[in-house]
Image 1 (tube, rainbow, N blue to C red):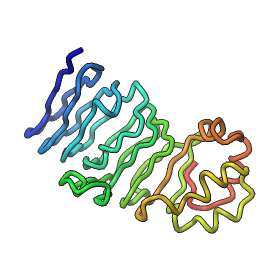
Image 2 (tube, rainbow, N blue to C red; image 1 turned 30 degrees about the vertical axis):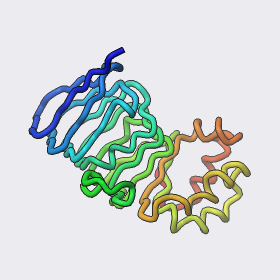
Image 3 (tube, rainbow, N blue to C red; image 1 turned 60 degrees about the horizontal axis):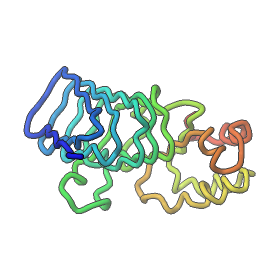
Length: 209
């Protein structure tokens, strides 16, 4: 089956709706692309959505197929955007060590709204998470996770959660400013329940839930 390549680059678009939904297409966003107040309907896998040196201002992302492990957000500058739908294993912000390509030097995120999104295992790197509206329970976010690892280790978390999440906080990129998890997904994976996690989460400052 042939694959269609669709390019958006070297231009500025405003108030447009982009339907990125063809599973037999690869969408290239950038380089030198600026989108202002646009709506992007995303219904493709991460491998079909490539971002390179693209700037989003006031855009809305409607994710109607869970977007898994999409690291190309690191090649985008996101300002005042809104996210809807499910995202898993995605990184946002500025992480130049991720790759030597020019796009990883321009990644940024600020003033974005994730309250209508479900995030799991998503990280926000080298940014100010206080400018972001992070999703609420059953999602929860650990702010400044690397520096707070010793403090978090003092709680009586469920055993597998301790070993897989808490004891591994030091392995995240050094400039990770927030880690967002989805409690029901964590519970299924790590032999616990959201009800067991919630009281412990509530005992710590600098948690968003």
